Amino acid sequence: MNIRTLYFLGLMALPGSLHGAEKAEEAKPIELTLEDQFERKHSVTDLRGQVVILVFGDRKGTDSSRELGEKLHVLFHPDAAGKAPGKARKAPVAGLPGVPTGVPSPEVAVIPVAVAGKVPDLVKGLIRSSMKKNAAELPIWLDFGTAMTDQFGIKEGEPNLVLLDSKGRMRMKLNGMPDKAAFEKLLQTTQNLRAEAAGLR
Image 1 (tube, one colour):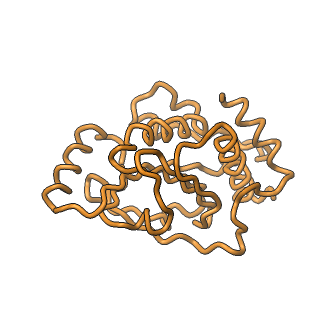
Image 2: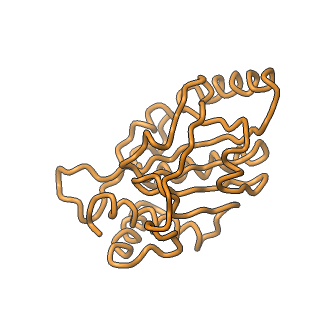
């Protein structure tokens, strides 16, 4: 699916309701704070105002989670295509239909989360060292407990997704690799939430 298709989905989504998304008034902001491989703390509360997609998986789902996260990032940040992670992270978000020229469109933050589970401190150090080497330019949130699985569930060996609106409320969740219909629904809902954040709905 290319960026033109994404825009088309966004245009279709604006007049409609949030298909398959949890009603905003029934959802509470998610509380989640994790450290990355550099032992820097990150919280979803720091991302208020942005639409957030948490892409997470266990060790066996690492590759597929990374590929899905990169695909989503490029769809919403088309200038990131083909660039090294450091430069790809800085690519501007695609404009949102309906946002006036010169006004920034709401950001879509695609956050990779590695679910390692409860492991000894020595293993934590090895995991961090490996990630520092293989992902030196991209912070990866690390769950060395049960925060992700307790709040969102997890399908082992596959990518999992949680979509948060600009107020940090969960509006969609996918456990396992999304099929074509689920993926298109994810894109449409994300565009809806961007429109909501921009005050267009």
